[in-house]
Length: 341
Image (cartoon, rainbow, N blue to C red):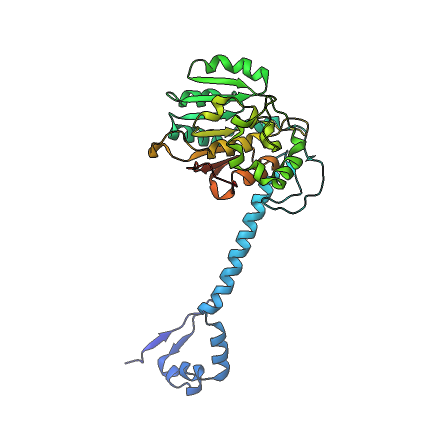
C-alpha cells in the first residue's frame, strides 16, 4: 500500500507539488507549531496583534469623534447656506456688557424665505390638526398657509395680527368663511433696534418679567405705555383686550417681515408670545390647563433665534422642522413669575 498522501497546492502555473505525510513526519521538531509558539520572537509579535477591549475603545472613540465633527460641519454648512441672516455679538442668557454695535444685515432681501417648504407645511398642519379646535393667535398673514390654518381649526377661533394693508385686503375675504378674524397692528420698533431692546430687558429684568407684564392692560396709560419695559411698550401694551384675555392654545410668530434693518423686527412679537403663553388660564378646569404651543418661523435669522432663547427658553423646545421651532410652555398657575427661563 502506498503511504497516505497529503496534497498542498500553490497558486502557480507549474504542476502542483506533491508532499507525502512521511516527509512531514521527518521534519525536525524545531519546525512544529508548538515549538514556534514557544519562541520569544513569535510570542512578542503574536501578543502585539491581539485585539483587546482596551485597544478597541480609543479607536472607537476616535472614529465616533470624527463622525460627529463631520456631521457638525455639515449642519454648519447647511445653516450658512441661507442667503439672509442677522449677526449680533451677544450670547443668549448672558449679562455681560454688550458692545454698542449696529445690526449687521448680510443680505437685504429674504422675501423668498417666507415661502414654507413641504416639510414645514406638513409640520404646521400636523400641529394645528392635533390641537384643533382651539384658540390660535398668528402674528403675520401669509397666503400660503393662513387659509389652511382657518380651515383646519373649524370650530375654534383664529386671530391674525398683520401690519401690511395689502395682505389684509387679499386675505380678509377668505378669513370670513370661517370663524377667523384679521386685526391691524402697528409696530413701533425696527429690526436694527434688537440690540438695544435686549440690552434694556436684561438691564431691567424686574420690569420686563412675566409678573410685571401681567398688569400691562390695567396699568397702561392713555398713550398705550406701561412702565419702563421697552419690549412691552413696543407691542404688548398696544394689543386689544381680546388678545390679552383670550386663552391661546397655539401662537404662531411669522410676522412682521423683519427682513431688513429698517423693517419691523420680531423682537416684540416673540416677547408678547412668551407673555401670553405663560399667563394664568381663566378656566379652572384642569383638563384645559394644558401647555401652549409657540411656533417661531425663520429661526435661521439671529433675531428670531436669540429672542426665542431669551424669552421662550431652550428647555421648552420640543420640536423643530426646517426653519420652525416649536416651544411648549406650561401656563403659570399664579401670577408670581419673576423670570422667563
